[in-house]
Image (cartoon, rainbow, N blue to C red; front, side, top):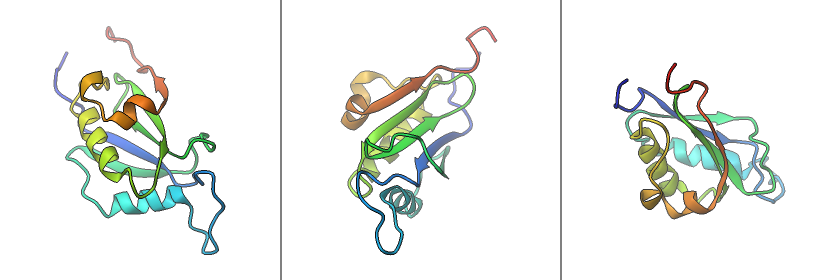
Length: 129
């Protein structure tokens, strides 16, 4: 079994999130703005940014998920703000990508990740196959 990180990690951003607000007159949603602002930044090596329609976490701010393949844990994080959490998401995505199992050690997780994990989803495959 390899101890190297996967070839690709996905940072999935819910573009439908309203973060408890109304859609603006121009139709912009906070989730779409989060995705657009992240798209304008450089993602860490090995991390792909992808917009998704809905993560069903509407009452808890903008939401994202980090996933990296069938043998890695997937995480869903909420309570994100579209303008003030960009760097935390980029840092967290890099830390996640650098793991072999998707488990970022607690002591190095961004504080927002420690306090705003909505779900932790086990890998599709067990260690033996």
